[in-house]
Image (cartoon, rainbow, N blue to C red; front, top):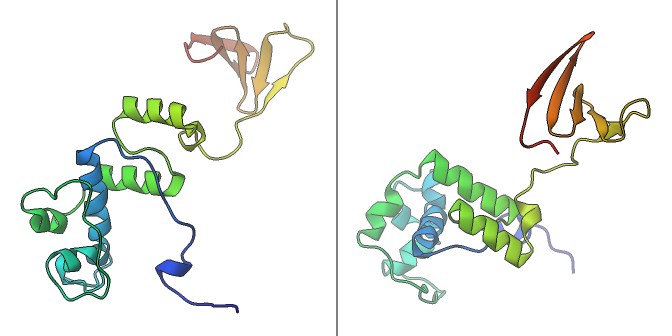
Length: 171
């Protein structure tokens, strides 16, 4: 039996990521409950009959949703209908897309390390390849961007002149 169709069932794999605390949990839930409002399907989030906010507000629904692990914040409906900041949106979309932890930077780093999620924090794609030059010292490499890395110095090769700047992130 092959089925085809459109909608959330066919959009891809299930997404999950660790969330630090109640504040971040509420931010994630607010983002989710705003989906119909963001897509401009309704004027207010609680008007979307197939959303969890409709169900929570007492709308008739076939599905009974379990309670949240924490209480909703006061004036929750007003909060959901307020726009999400660009910073919040970008952070949440990154968590959804990459599966990285959602929280403060220090917590994210620690959680990623302990849960084996370090790869979700690295940039996508292959790292730049460094080419070794046999005519130079054994600890000298060239990157494809024209930089020569020597111990803790970065030297940009500009014709016959070399400009040197110390950088702590090169090893």
